[in-house]
Length: 332
Image (cartoon, rainbow, N blue to C red; front, side):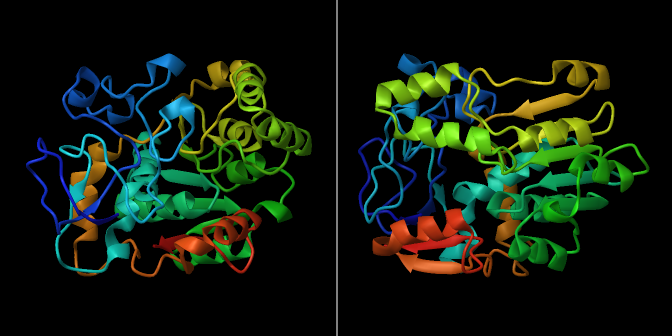
């Protein structure tokens, strides 16, 4: 997010000096997909050469190679639709998370198909998982259970009234979640971890190896080999009650990953997944975060604030989960 410095001649809804937040997905707002709220599948910006959905800021050639937003100056394609003009009230950090993690978490909970009287399990209490449990509370979900293995993350979720399961202290997470829900399992499960899950050291080595391959070979490895660490996904499928819903907010990249199809079919579960359609949720979320009482705790969510020059060290700290790091904000 930042301040508009300059606008193209077809951008009439913004002017220099406006404060905006920019979704990480790039949509035109006018095509068949955008007209149906499927902004992450925008037909104008689809990366057809890679058979992928809408372009994303700061990603590889798979999603358009658009320079990302962690810079002093950023060019924003389709700026007549994407950027969200912000009110003059409150700090930048109150609105910053509208770019990605808050709508991603909100969509994850919405897609889990839970509400009053239901139980939701959120596996992974990183930034998206933390926003997911807060979103679920905002939506009135009766019972929320968070799963993680990092002390600071578990403690933060607990401070928000969430029941927690420490992955390090239980033998089987799915069985534990069933035991906590009368043997039935949660009504919905949000996987907020994805392919970087702990629990499979063999897959971890394969992923690391693929990342070091030359670009063409690395893409082939990702596209043709099941390299995701599926610990969390399989746990979600095993834990959710029969007829329940698994919602994937965590990203998976392998094309040949083994899936427990017999279990999925027998339990009759619903699965929803995909990149976040950020603008689909913007109006509702902007209204919530603009309220004086900061019900989602955004003003104090970041644990670390560092300069752009220190970004590499901050990424390392976040990856290693050191120094109590939960969320980093970079300031140019």
